[in-house]
Amino acid sequence: MAADVPAPSPSDSREEIAYREVGRTKISAGAARLMSVAFAALLAGVPAAHVARELAAGRAAGPPENALSWTQIGPVVMDAISMWEAAAGGALDRLIEANHVLRVGLKRYETDLEDASWLRAVVQPWMQWATARWLRGGSENVQMGRNGWLFFGPELEYISSAGFLDPREHARRRREGDRWTPAPQPDPLAAIFRFRDELSARGIHLVLLPVPVKHGVHPERFSARAAGGTVLRNRDWPAFVRALDQAGVEWVDPAPALLAAAAAHGAAYLRTDTHWRPEAMEAVAALVADRLAARLPSTKDPGWMAGRETVTNLGDLAVMLNTVEAARWPAPEVAEIRPVRSADGRPWTPDRAADVLVLGDSFCNVFALDSMGWGRSAGFAEHLSLRLGRPVDRMVRNDAGAFATRSMLVNEAARNPARLAGKRVVVWQFSERELLRGDWKLLDWPAPSGREGERP
Image 1: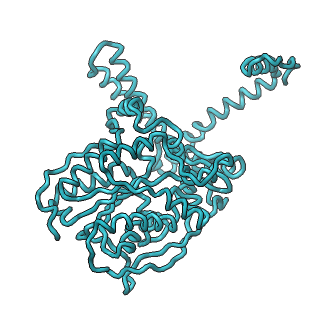
Image 2: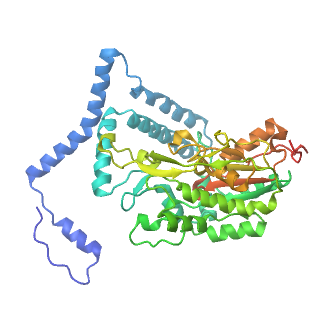
Image 3: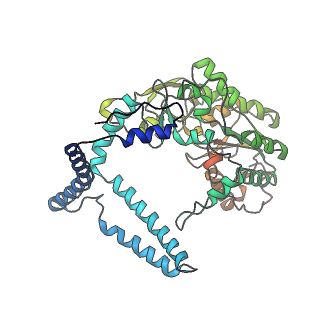
């Protein structure tokens, strides 16, 4: 129990008040012993229960498939010893290198141990449900917004942290690599300018489509203190677009279309998912199509048509939150998509011979890829093709928008020099959060073959 504490003086700092109050807190000997025993039991009980279950499973049916053994630490220790022997410099330098290897290896072992824990699998979803549902506490990557809205944590970091063009931030990120993971290339402008130049050498025009993060479009859904109507971005966004304009790199800003969709439909992004709603995506596709129309010659309209379909799904953030399914919270979300099909009902397909190529991440896939749970044939490339009235080629991957599709394109161009034949425009879509945390690798392109300008 706490003893009587003198009233604070107006001149006291918060630190002085806190120190005085904590310093006068008294706990009885019995309560102290009980709390110590409970804490020790909690610390020892979890690993003891895990080991006991593994031993029991081993006696019953052999080692569990995902069981982890302490002997896995042995190779980590051997790696650290090898680094000590191989590292250059004095004893302190070698010790630092060996310690780094040991620390990374033990961290990986700890992560594997957590993933294989049956107790965690049983208890954590219920704890996560109770924390999120009643205390509005999220998880490592999922943040709780207002009225059941969920947000992806790294996207808030993009808005609120250091500028993504800051040389000090670049230097810090270049120190992130280790013997297993190469350091990232943090400068987006260097990668964008090289990509523009490589495409230009092949007679192809680049159009960038950076998609704002959910926090930026719907800050009012995240905090009652935020106002909607303006898209929030990283502090270096103005310098970034200025550099693009000065270098002659064309880019399309989806912000006006997203805000208009939010005003017309109540939201531009899905409540429990990181991605845009289908109405907002179609509005951005129309915006890009209007920008491209002047660059493209007329061609025969393939006759694509859009239908209507209702889909119900639990968003990727709700899945990531990892609450127990039996609690049925968060609830699934409903959206109406417009699948693009031919007159005879065939779903839209990309055309490798098309003069427009879309490179994109999960924002392109979200209504196009069945496995994402939001339907198929209704994604960004489909609706861009529908709006343009022409075939469109597509190359998408759900993650690593800073380099993944560029790398795929470079690899295909190396295997097949005619892969870019007839292409006039490449639309490169990526999430804005990649500007801060993406790996903007500088890729080595094959030399232009001279066949890129040929019509297939």
